[in-house]
Length: 305
Image (cartoon, rainbow, N blue to C red; front, top):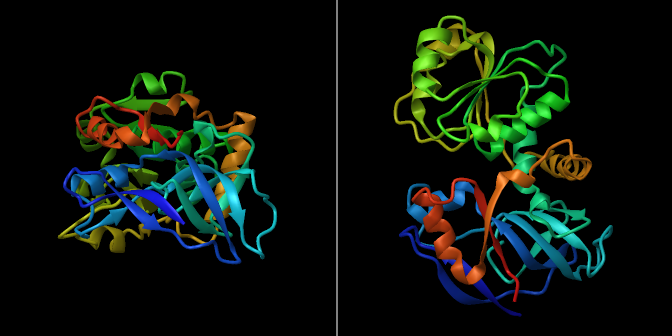
């Protein structure tokens, strides 16, 4: 089947080519694309700051309609709507296996579930019986808000959020201490006492010293980082655990299912977290607007004919 595929070479380009897509295997469905979210990693690939691959096929936050199904696939039928994870979502049609999709009721932005599931997956990495633990979230965007909503839903109350943007985005967040000047507050107020859980959603290496985490606390890597030199002395001598919750974890599909249920119930409110919708023909504009700051919220692509 001939389909249109978008990719980047990391030079701020979006290239369209015709892809000869195979028929879905017995354990796969074929999905007709409807919506595809633009992840920060997609933007980094487009900008050339994430990978040096000569050609990167993007798009892993997807909503579409089942157009074909393999012989061993159950639970969905042709015509059903699904949220999927994994590339290549920037295509008119693509195949994805069992374990990579969740059935949804409507093809709406709030059901772009992969980034919501990423937030839940990160939040789960710090959950334990003691709800009094102190939690710092470094970052104020989509993932940060999902993590906060999920932990609050599960009974946690002691939050501190650091970040320079999206202050209005957090105006309704209860029980949150919000500090736009990240470095100043951390260095002057928290370096000595630290947090039980320090969730770092930035790509900046300076927060990886371990100096903001309590003895026997946990540092959570929530974003891709390139760190040339890292001193693990603090982590070793103070018993600090480093966690790297990945969307490739075995339990990620369960996170997507939970995301679908919580979004449907309104327990995680993501409607206001999505920015502008761009037609696939204007995909380059969508990426450029993320880079130049015209589009601050997470934006997405529609594949409407």
